[in-house]
Length: 203
Image 1 (cartoon, helix red, strand yellow):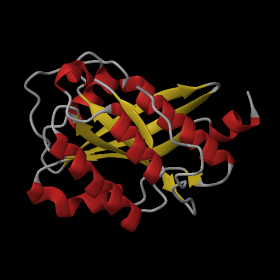
Image 2 (cartoon, one colour):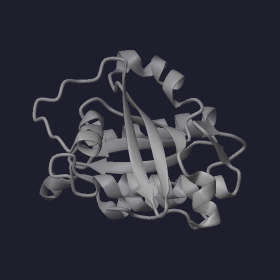
Image 3 (cartoon, helix red, strand yellow):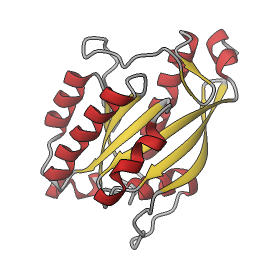
Image 4 (tube, helix red, strand yellow):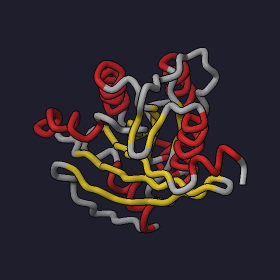
């Protein structure tokens, strides 16, 4: 076991999903945690909680995942879940451009109120790529500008879902080796700048 992996073995991190209602946040977590897809997935009320373990080299990264409601009336509650999160996945859906614009709101919200949280921008519903209104190039350029990781995935067919979370886990392993993150959340870390070289696509 490497020194980095040894230091991170059995670590637990808080992860939060943010984004508009209907973009597929709950479906992404269901696909990740249970390898299930429900065409008639109900909208989350308040927040839902999941646990998931992700192997990274010789280590195991344990995620406590909070899936937040995307409806406007629950927006004020989101800060209860993202504060202290080690990582956030900000989700939009490829066919609806307005959800990409709303994702930018959540990126700004995190930058202002939880700047230590590592952010990944996720374009869901890649199975509907023929109906996309947000190009991968535009989303990747925005991610580079803001210093985010970026990926596309499909909760429906599973493409890219585990890869997105694995990249988050690897980012936390690397940050842990620099004493940026602690068990369950973050301490003293800051979001990398757009020039840090951490931005990448994990679709």
